Image (tube, rainbow over all chains, first blue to last red; front, side):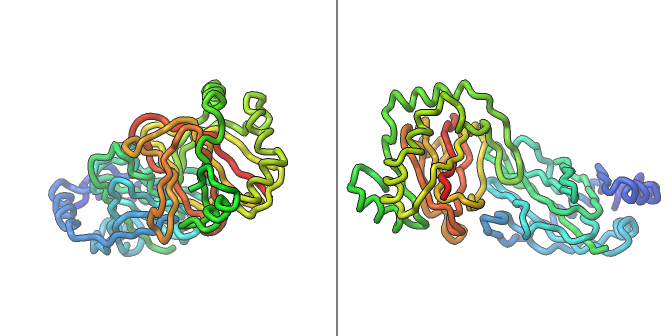
Length: 168
Length: 187
């Protein structure tokens, strides 16, 4: 279940997203829900190895949350992405994003020094660095592109995200 | 690999090298000159470059910097252009771009092809030596896999032809530092 505080603030969240173009919701899920999500994500992921675009693992992921649907206005299809040591996602024509709303949910706690953090960019090149905090949901409207920083040798584990998007 | 062989064999080994045309000239400059270049480079201001593709330290362009004039003069000499032509079959002009690069622990440069208008040959003059354990190899790719690793050897000059095939990266540094003078020869 979504953090009840956010459920009570639904209208405020919608207006911040509309006004600012993004919102970050820390402690988004309640403990049990997060645990369940992480348990479900243990299914094997398919490795993507396109060195000019990215090296990571991904798999489809079914997650339907009525609260998010209300915030975004549509149902969001999700995929799970895993970044291990040496993995990355580069910005290029292939990672340009179509106009729409994008959501990124952190399943794991990370530290920025080891890479593996996600960055969204808008049309003017402004960066929004997604916090590496577990159980944080970032929603961004109409980013132009995104990337995931190379996971370097200081990394101690995988960085797992759920990535959702819906067209305008 | 380009060692002290004949010019003909240089050209053959460069042009037929896999995964794309490259060569390494060992002991490109005498040791004292390399030490001098390294010492000059350490005096230069470096700035941190950080993006989706890389994290590394870089100087500005060094072409007009008197501390590197001997190297620039060598690269712009008729003899060098002729040597490059014989070695690679590629005609280069006097136009070059030269900068210093420094990679520290976790620094890296992800795969890319270097293509930009006029660039014919990319070069790296290694100013220090790194082992496999330390990282920092120039990695050449073929079909999404590393096909060749060239570890920094002090005084070696690595060269490769810039093309749609020249996908390469600099392996992450695991320990130590990697100092080099890097750039491109233009057509």
